[in-house]
Image (cartoon, rainbow, N blue to C red):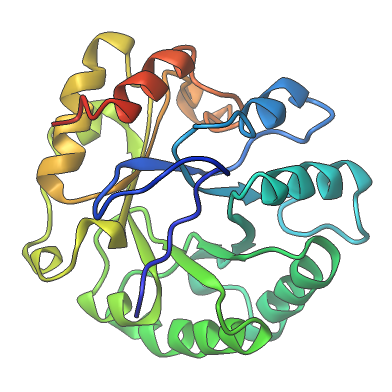
Length: 249
C-alpha cells in the first residue's frame, strides 16, 4: 500500500527523505514549548503522535485539540495513539478509542502501540487495521511493534516500528533480512539515551538498516521510571540541521 509523507507547509520532499516520527510529547499544558516547536516551518516531520491520556481520554481536551489543530494546519500528519497492550486489549476497545480520536481530534491516522509481533497476533491486527481504514480510508497506520515482527504485518500498515529502545541496544542491532523487500519509507526506528556525539553513527545505522522515519533523543527512561519521549532532545536544533542537509549519508 502507498506510503504518504506529511511535511510542514513550504517544504519539499524527495523520493527517500529521512524525517521524524514523534512518538508523543507530554500534555500541551506540561510541554507547551515542545508542541509549538513542532510547528516550526521546515522541520522534517513525517508524523506526530497524540496521546491525551493513555489514548483519547474520556472527553475532548481543548488543549490537545488546539495542539493537534496547529500541527495539522502546518501540514503535519497527526496520529492517535491506540494501546494494543501486546494483544490483550479487545477489538471493541481499540475501535472505540479510534472513533474518539477521529471524531474529537480529526486525526490523520493511528499508531497501534505495543502491537503484537508474532504470527499468532496477525489475524487480529489485520482485522483492526481494516476497521481503522473503514473509519478513514486514507488513514496512515503505523504498527508499533518495537522489534522486527513476522513479515506478514508489513501488508497491513503503512509503516512498522521495527526498533524502539535504548541506544546501547540500537548500536548493536541487526536488521531482519525480509525488510530488504520494502523501501525505507516503510520502517521507523525510535531510539532514546542517544548522546549527541553519536548522532552521525545512529543516522548511519538507520540508513544501513533501511528506516526513513526516526526519532532520536538523549532523554532516557531512567530505568523504566520516566518516559523518554515526553520532551524534545537536547540537541533538537542540531539534529534538524543534520537531517535537513542529508548528513545521514
